[in-house]
Image 1 (spheres, rainbow, N blue to C red):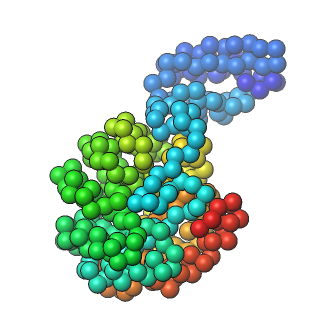
Image 2: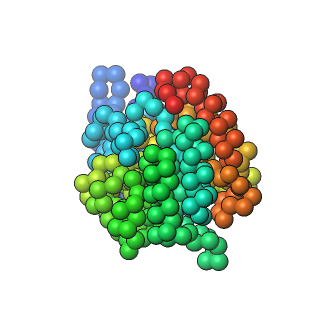
Length: 333
Ligand code: PEP
Ligand code: MN
């Protein structure tokens, strides 16, 4: 409680806790009174008390997650993806098409982004599409194409795994398994990814809270796999001028609570080509450990997410502009 808090203020906090089914234990000190609150199964957050008169600060002592928490593991985790280190001083850029469409398309894009400075290649062989009539991806042929693109460029490959039945197959080709927003709480998939021996790029569910996001990562770590990269990709809100609302404030929030690195995906986060560059710069400024950017050499012909794909030329501009921003926040790119 604040130093100036009255007995009445303390009583109000105690009553609020009791109304929520919790126990309050006032601890009077020389300067101020602290109130310990127990019996919280994790469902009541600090907001229940923060705005009551006389409250100075609400400190959460325990979290429902452990392995992902900074409390448990203070040093930043570095995740190696095919030799590329994620979570260190360098901001890592993963770029490529939304979907693998053909060998020619994927290799063309992979070479272009490699030349422009990308560190990792992305591309979906299995696509989670809203409509069953949309292009669903090339499946195993897409994985083979990604392996060829890796061969041609040296870029490690990040690709999505949609379900447990294809996980072993995807893991044979990929350097990193992407678990998409729609699968963030597919707990069986998370457990299997945790036993795969591959690093995991875990995208935030489109209506997931920070705690749910971290608990999803906890599933992977709990299976003995410490190599998780989180990825903010926008959440669903009432806003109708972008595809999703990119929640950049989650970057410093994650940095504070967890030792895991976090990427930002401004492509799915905005859904609009012209918003990708400014939000990439903002992501780097906010402390993101990496960017996930969709690039297509012929966006108008892309089989998925053409409206948000950058051309290689625009991707080059992004890389150029992001470099001084990274340097301004003490990183390299
Ligand atoms: C993707 O990155 O290819 C993708 C499908 O993204 P999300 O899961 O964030 O929608
Ligand atoms: Mn996409």
